[in-house]
Image (cartoon, rainbow, N blue to C red):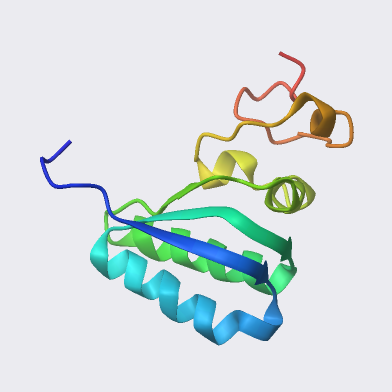
Amino acid sequence: MNGKPESKLYLRGDLTIYCAAELRDMLVACLLEDKTVDISGTGSVDSCAMQLFIAAKKCAASRGKKLRIEGHTPEFIRMLDLYGLIRQFGDPIRVPASLKKELSLSYSLSGDGGKS
């Protein structure tokens, strides 16, 4: 920890194509200000929003930074699972037991398909 208080951006509402420009601008600001993105207050997530998160993660990595995402909702976890991005995103994710039954977790952090 570098001694400065952690700064967070709290996203609310649906993360869909209808808010893509606004979401892009917020993610860019997070990269510039080294903020953590809290998505615990979000609802629906579509592939457009996932593309923006992927681009933001890649941009952060190319600059030697890490874009942290926390508060993963079941909708966001489902999208990570659908696209096989759980390991690539690298954020700690708590998957509720009830949700594990419907996920493939083929790209889980443990590398064993979520069986551990």
